[in-house]
Length: 319
Image 1 (cartoon, helix red, strand yellow):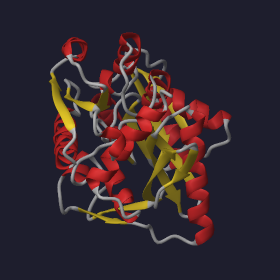
Image 2 (cartoon, rainbow, N blue to C red):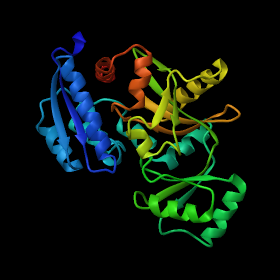
Image 3 (cartoon, one colour):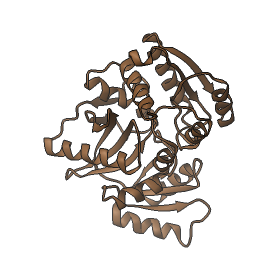
């Protein structure tokens, strides 16, 4: 931690996206971790994009820890503003954040790179052509069950699993509240797993795999952020060859989008052992129930050490 002794770290958190509460928890946890290490920190609790830019401009911090989730805090807009202002910050650059946040675009990139991802169709709000119900019935005949989601949201906001047309339509209405572009994906029966991809000293590798086991239903917003209603296993109990393939796919996804420093790759492991990439998170949660800290813990890292490593590795990308 000697490298950070004279570095002042600003933590940007809050925002105005549907994931604000998660960001508040992440930012608070990161601030506490940095304070435990006796490092110089400055909280930047922001309410809007304009507020964030204003506070960054007036701050004298050497580097900014991005603890924002969703919307402009994670889709590359904040990162682009920080680049224009000549400010250093944690994690991926603006281009990678934009690609990762737009699931429609990232899935197209995965397909072009031969990275397994669930089959899907794109729907645009207010541009549903022809007989939508008939098209949805055809998808159900083909896939049996589907997942409806906004293209540009995280934390499972606006996500619905549906096995009939009525539920799909409800899911479309729900997802349309958050984005103009929606995805209807084939539901992949199997196991929910996630992989933290980590860059350090020129090496890119996967940390121990985390399996997510909700006690009921699927891994929705409530299951993610309510302590005690989801069980986690890390390292996940997987055959060696399956685990190796999962890590390979996670690293490939991180690299395909040009991510930097760290990311979290969410994967659905099918019943035949195929890992289907759902999404890449460039600013993953850093709360008490978050997944990246669980993977880091399996490496023997404390939470403060994890946070410090993210800052150190982020500073290295500017050298």
